[in-house]
Length: 84
View (cartoon, rainbow, N blue to C red):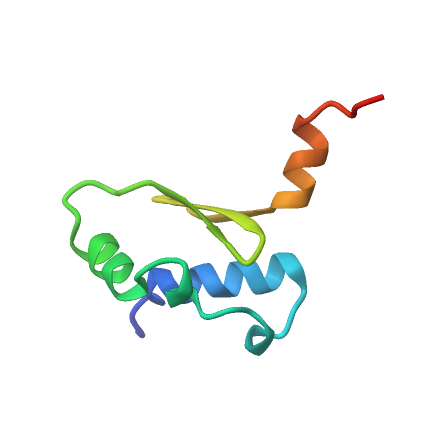
């Protein structure tokens, strides 16, 4: 049985799926957050951590249930009233 993917890898994979992009076209995760620190945090925490961050134009939420990604433009359209 292989170990579960690191949380930093799961974040990039989830954003790639949401945006339908080649992973090589995304900015490095390290530009926005320390991926190694995230991996250590999620691997060693005594209680499951919860984290929300912005990456590649998306809102990314990570918790015990997994990684949830929402494009920022979709969030703005659904939460901000239009000006007339």
